[in-house]
Length: 509
Image 1 (cartoon, rainbow, N blue to C red):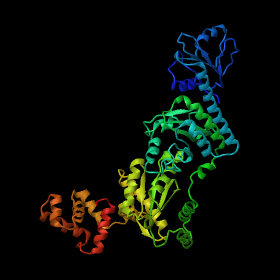
Image 2: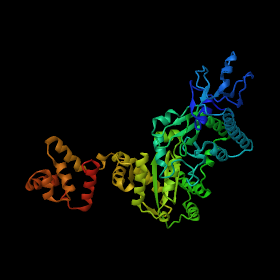
Image 3: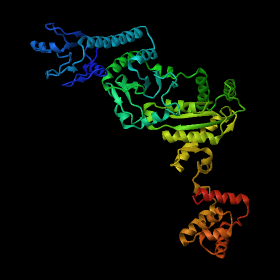
Image 4: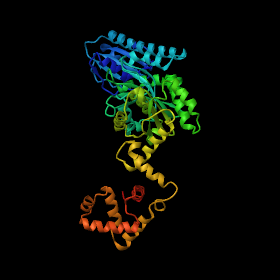
């Protein structure tokens, strides 16, 4: 295993006082250590350990090897050579040589074990487990949609989520990364890079893994056990190179580690949504066999993905986060949205509790969610999906400041919009109301304002007069005029409903 001069020096610095007169090379090109004796033939790519009393003999060489490292035991003379480091007087050259030999043995053995595992067709998890004692920090490989392909954690008690961000604790990190300008900037880097802790709270050393010149995966070492050195990036790059040769696109799906039951359940729901003429009896039979009974109560929610989520396919964290929040649920991707069906009976949650969970979820991720009504049985599942879509689209329009929208919040607005699907409002409202509007425009009267305020105050004349800042007798005079124009005494319940709906459609209520 080739090591760099700066990496070897950092290792020695843990045990000795080290003096480095010139900047050391960070290129991994050193292959082995040699105990220097005067007159030997000097070779490149070698670490030479030199005794203090032999340092002057180096001047006998016309040219010193360019890609080597000289470690001098106990001399602080100004020796002009770029790759040199000097230890204090108390050290012994043989002890230094032994320690460096152990260092090379350690990384050579690691390299041999990795290559052997690769040739034997071992998994990426195995490669990371072999590497865990070397790096002494947690390691994982993630696809760019935050699906964790493989992982090896320092603390074995840490729950190994299949998707980074699928739990309430880790979802914050994914949201922070997606919104980070720095995260986008490092997306196409070719060498190891240090990702600072200010974005997610935990620093990491990373290597992008590419396919067809496009970053599809990332090898990550977390700074969760010891301080990371940026100079060990070449080690992570070597590991990433082997992992790159193992990876293939099918691992994204396989790595989700989802149960066959869940996959089967999501297929049932997808069939219901895709096919308007689906055999509901057959679908109901399949759901019953999965324990989702026709007697249970259900709810559907739709999550609107951001453009970034669509482009980068980063919807897996959302799916698995929702799956973890709601124990008896089935979230999946459908038409560029994450749709989730929740079995309210099995998870024992009310509509209010589900809305509260969703509000906590969107507060972190800044996503919009539409939620259907809770209904019993399988025959309503497709309609519940439609309700969630309506809640999402109308809710975002009429309440742009809110992130969670329920169908109950928008049902009235939806009903009014249905009236005008085929004809404009002016062609279906009470015809005489249009006459009132024309009179208001031509004669500067306030008949429509008076009538709408009268409806808003539930036909209470005193309250209506107070709201209009007019005398009660003036109000009664206006109402008489309005009744004459409408040709109505405003007592027939059916006509009152028609007039009220007409006022709503025209925007006066």
